[in-house]
Length: 266
Image 1 (tube, one colour):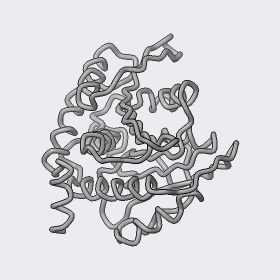
Image 2 (cartoon, rainbow, N blue to C red):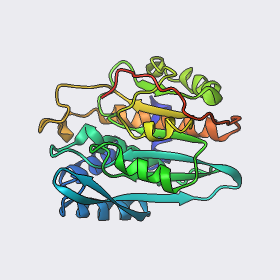
Image 3 (cartoon, rainbow, N blue to C red):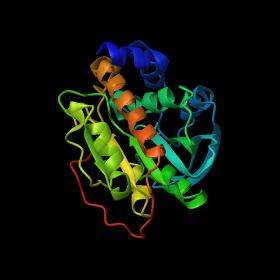
Image 4 (tube, rainbow, N blue to C red):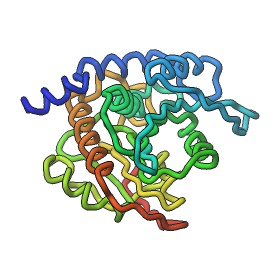
């Protein structure tokens, strides 16, 4: 635990700093398409030091607009790694779903880790309306070589539910799993109900980190006080190690129309 604390301090990340980001996001309306959601998008553009990517989508109430936030950190090797989370919610407070995942992306993006590949950090809008923001990204950007998606990582207890469809990076995942006993429930399969699926169905290797559904899901009880912040920090360190391992030399290939199995997903 002491070693983990030193690593997190080196990343500039502590349970208190994660709590700050979660509190900040939970104070804002994050329903994509509502005018007030622009405040959250503007804050995240600043926090990520990224750029807006605007898109339109249709709902039963008519056309709406959303804003993804994208930051590109150039690398020297061919291929891009994508690290993502959705920042929208469905009208509740949205601490676990998904301020927790956004805090993880911000932590890794702002840690100044030196990667060999170009790394794209993406905060997607309109996930709750049907993966709209990530689908827009897929249709308008270079295909990444690997996607790591954080969605609902606020309730780490005994295990981390990781889902992947990634034979090319299986060795990297197993290597990191061996160092983190809580991660042994990771399986090589993927569900359809978060942004990684937009990439998985195009044959991109993906991993989705997720600590499971709780009774507070999509309710006003999904509050900052309910989260395990030390657990979130542990997952951030796990993700950092996984990204470094993947960045270090996996042999990537793609398949079209990759079959994606339903898992125990949100």
